[in-house]
Amino acid sequence: MKTRTVLLLIALLGACCAASAQPLPRKVPNVKLLDVNGNPATLPHWGEKNLMIFYVDPDRHKQNNDFTVDMEENHRAEGDNLYGFGIMNLNDAPMIPNGMARTMARKRTASNGGTVLSDEASILRDAWQLGDCNNQFVLLLVSKEGELVYLHKGVLSQAEIKRFYRVLDNYR
Image (tube, helix red, strand yellow):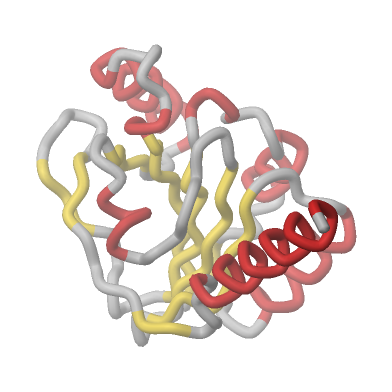
């Protein structure tokens, strides 16, 4: 009897989780975050270009380091129709002071010319219904029509990287 009850609870929990997962593609709004100087900023090139976004918990910024280095060194996040940038998920990294994280981002963007924004209150997570992003490297692709077309959280397997590149090729 106990086993049956536990199995029923697991099935119900699974059904609830599946029901809360949002299918892709889906419309998402532009949001107001902060730039590396702490000033309000919306997502760059919204509605003009497709956006490839690294939404990263600073506690796990190295989670997909080889992938991000490859993207940067081989200019894979660039194209006439594509703009890639990062957003620091600072709300899920309470041990790292926000000002220190933005200072580190300023140094990095000065050396690579990239764009980094900060999300101190889980604004992106909530507005886009991303669910739990704590301790996750979240890779997102948003079309210029404002549709979230790709979402992956956590470590990227080689198979997932290949899948991402296939999707990305349609948005360059």
